[in-house]
Image (cartoon, rainbow, N blue to C red; front, top):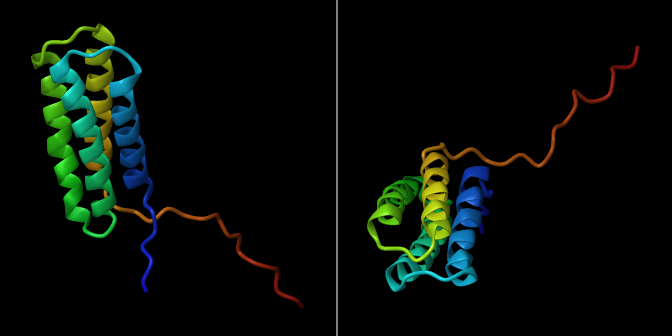
Length: 117
């Protein structure tokens, strides 16, 4: 079975999606913002996981980030914290979703031992 390395960019998008999902439950939201926040968070995690195997799927997170940014201002909110949280997370998801898939390194190896004379 082939294993695919977790890339840093996809890992960051997974973390952002988890934060977005959790943040929906941490403080009071309007019904529309609550639903939007947890659904977008869950989709962000799903798309980032799928992008580990099919890198082109990361562009779904790009579209999702644009929606999250627009909806942060368009859907009525109870708290300004919700608007700013969603807007900032949207920008972060957008930037990270545009990064190419580069395998995460496990450590830096030196040049090895010096040759013996």
